[in-house]
Image 1: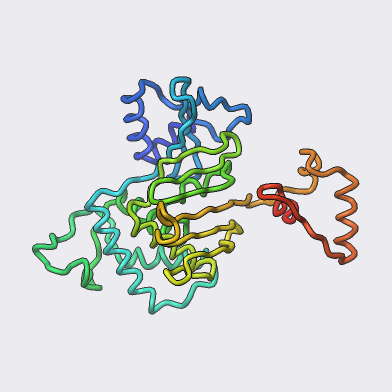
Image 2: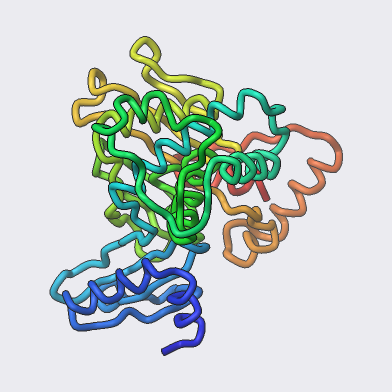
Length: 316
């Protein structure tokens, strides 16, 4: 086995569980790769791609299936861990009202870690009291002088989910981390498709759970772009903090199959003008002409159909 694969399995026990279940189901073990080849055959692929611990992407396709399927691998919370997550989330939200407003994502991440550490006791773990034993526990929270008991594995998983849902992209975090992602198209709770740079349009296994979960996520995303959606204003367009563009259609009243959204993700490092020349998107004369226009403060219009490269050219 590849040494990097072994290290990934040691750091991420849930990956080992997924591999074992997949091997029992199919009789094969995926190959671990850190990058994908452009000549990938979607009818003969079985690859695990790391996209930042604890998240992995599994691409699997055979001649019998006729296409490649896109699976996301991340830690799963047990029922007891979900209860602890809810309690801890409520505790840190309550404590955050007494903290200064973070000025950056790094400050927000540090504040979350601080509030979690104040809310949990990492050791042997243990169960929360049953709701029957202590009525209204989840509503009234654990008294502030007490902490939620966690073992190290529970702490790692709950920290991931809290950061994923507050700072990250929630349920779509695994695919947002994929460097080969171009677009996301989602209609309803389960119909999450992506446009992959190598595989093209591909269905994922992601789900928002139920309509309430999807609507809550869409409200959160719309607030991030400063254009909150509601039944009165169900459509919003804007750019997320990382530069990704998102279009939201909220409420089944105007989207028959349920709330929907599309998102276009851009590379963290913009494509350079030299890369565009090498790809044949523009020639040297066109690039030099635009350079002269920009140097002299002239205005330029970029026009074209959807996905023709307008924003890519502007970023370059």
